[in-house]
Image 1: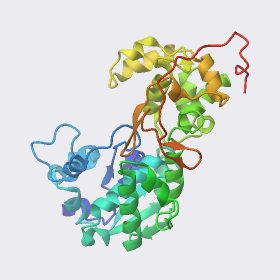
Image 2: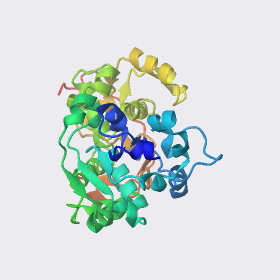
Image 3: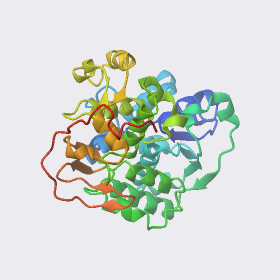
Length: 355
């Protein structure tokens, strides 16, 4: 262990953007967390606790926190068996590098809440106030980058615990209530929460902000999926990654009353882990809006009136009968009506106007 920490470089814990830290020389022990907390049902607490516990024979492939600590696997194999808390103890400083994206901020509050019962680890923690996407920073500039750091105190822990518990709640009410709280201890948290709340179904259209942005871009002529996946400055939404954007497109295209036409039908049968097949199917797609899609973009129709909804937002399960909405304020579920079939208008439908 002394071989690893002898240089006294800090241990760095980070999100998906942490892959360049070892090459940058800022640390000899970077740890990246790839949990996605913004899409699908949240992992149960016991699963997360098992992930960061000491490694046992019950940890399957990819099931332990050390799986992406490549240097540790190459040089000091025994360290990968430790719990995350035990792995933090030999270091004088443990730095938390999480960028402003909502998933990174959720990882940050989860980690702070996780480490809160261990004061000897909390005393080592510093949060780096990263103001851009770490995936876009190459190792050389990362090595020289001067990023403000704050010590983790009781205020940071209380804010993180409050936020993590709110996000795990069975309704979005607690997260909405956080906007009235002082969140200044974690300066990047409030914008991330707003981004997340905007992904609740709109009161007008029944779709989240990213889904609406995808429809708007298709209406403007972005008919190829690559543009929707990779033109970040055009898409402007930062909640979901490329894989999740694909799932959103499928939800918009493969319901009983789709808002999008032209998405390759093979995606209906391909498994979610079939990355190559799915990538080829996306590239074959040529997207356009249906008449319902045009009506939704014009804020004249509600997607949830014509299609079943069943998805997760944090700890909240959203269904047609239990559809929390965003207005831009939180709107409680209203009595739902039976699903209808959208009747297309004529070829010169008034909604079908370029934006």
